[in-house]
Each structure stands twice: as structure tokens, then as C-alpha cells.
Amino acid sequence: MNRKISTGALTEGAILSALTALLGIISYYIPFLTLLIFIWPIPIIILGKKHGLGVSVLATISAGILLSLFTPLLYSVPIILMYGTLGIILGYGYYKNVSILKTILGGYFVSLLSTIILLQFYSMFTGINIMTEITQTMRLAMEEVGNVYNAMGMDMTTLEGATKQMEDMINQMAQLFPATLILIPAIVTMINMIASGKIIKRLGYDISEVPPFREWRLPNYASIGLFLIITIAILGQYLSIPSFDIVYRNLLYLTFILFTVQGLSFVAKYFHTKGFSKGFTIASVVMVFLIPIVHTVVQLLGLVDVVFNLRDKIKINEG
Image (tube, rainbow, N blue to C red; front, side, top):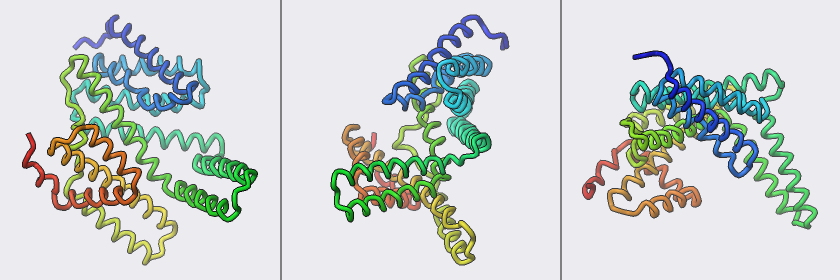
């Protein structure tokens, strides 16, 4: 293969790098479009698939320079490092026809590593722990809300109860920060894999896509992981390991997330098999997050599905 980058590839790279920079600028200046930043890597992924590593790297650098001209460096540099590298890795995976699982894992670990590095640099240069800053900001906001309610004449007992609930929530968020740090790169990677896969397919490329959500499932041995977590929890409490409670909470939180996803996947599979509409399936998923008891049932379904292959028993009407 000729390693020289063609003029056409450079032209397309310039156009898509400008589009990438524009996405970043819009997400910075327009509050209700902030979430656009999660799809920032998509143009880079498309370039990587079509033209290879060189063009996607050049486009990322160009987009980064443009973004830095119109937004603060404290915004642009993290975006380039977190989402630019993710786009390069995912695009390269598509270009080399690497398996979907390996591409996802590669993108995830690069995204996680860049996030950790950025947090370390932020802490090093500012002397501020990012989680401490977030919790302090939330506490200040909570105090302001409390002052407003107090001025409106809210009953002090009610106000104190609400304040305590908010304080407990903030403390819990701080304790679960490591798990959240692990989870967010996974979500961002999957969003970009699914979205870019559909776009690349529409452009006429034959690629392997992320399987439909109803086909997502944990391996059977995932139940062993739950057993190990319970065993570790018992040992940790018995041995009185310092700060072990935080580690245990994060492990348990991640486990519950995995079983929730497995349970939702099972529900989607069941509804698909029985011929329910997509609208009904989506409404059911929304209900899971609105009604705590339904959420718990779905988590249990996920656990049972992992252990007993429950979904294999609902294939009767499929097809």
C-alpha cells in the first residue's frame, strides 16, 4: 500500500477536522448542547477508517489547534487528549478490521488512561483534588438552595431533613468516584462505537458493528466475580483493612451496574422475541430507572440470566 497521503484524503481530513473543532466549540458555548462533546471523536473515527492512522492523527492535531484558538486551554487540552486519542484508536481498529471486542477494549483503556493522566496533571498543577472541588461546589450550591428555602419560610425540620439527604448523597458520590471514573470511559467508548459504526455502514463500508443491545450478555463466569466480591468483603471486614469499605462499595456498585445492563438486555431480548414494539421496550427501560423496585427486579433478572442462561429459554417464538 502506498504510504503517501493523497490530496483527497488531506482535503477530507481538513473538512472533518474543522467539523470536529466546531462540535467542541458548540458544546462549550451552548449549554444545552454540552453533551455533543461525547460524539467529538466520530469525525476522527470516520477518517481513521477511510484513510488510516496518519490522516486521523493529523486531523486530531488540526482540530485541537482550532479548538484551542476559540476555547480556553483548560477545556481544549483535556478534550483533545481524552476524545482525540479515543477517535484515533477506534478509527484504527476499524481500518485494520480488528474485532469489535478488541477495538472497544483498546478505546476504553486509552480513554481511561488519558482521563487518569489528566486528573493527575490537574491535581499536580492546581494542588486541588478534583473530587474535593466537585463536592465543595455541590455543598455551596446546597447551602444556597437552603438559604432560598429558608427565606421562603420552609419548615426547619423539613429543611434539615432535605439538607441531610443531600449531604449523604454528596458523600456517597465522593466514595463512588473511582467506580464512576471507570464507568464513564466505557459509556463514551460505546456511544462512539455504536454511532460511528452506523455512519460508516451508511458510507458503504462493510464493517462489524456492535451487536444489538438485546444480544449483550456477560460470560457465565461473571457470577464467580460476584461470589469473589462477597468473599473479599467478608475478609476485608474480618481483617479490618483500612479504607476497605470504600473499595467494597465501588466494586459492588460496578457489579450492580453490570447486572442492571444484563437485566435490561434480557428484557430487550424478551420483548423482541415476543414481538413488542421498540417504543414499548424503550418505555419499559425508562420505567426501570424511575421505579426503584423495578430496577431491583431487573438487577435480579440480570443475575439469574448470568447464572442460569435464562434468555436461552425464550427463543421459542423468535424468527
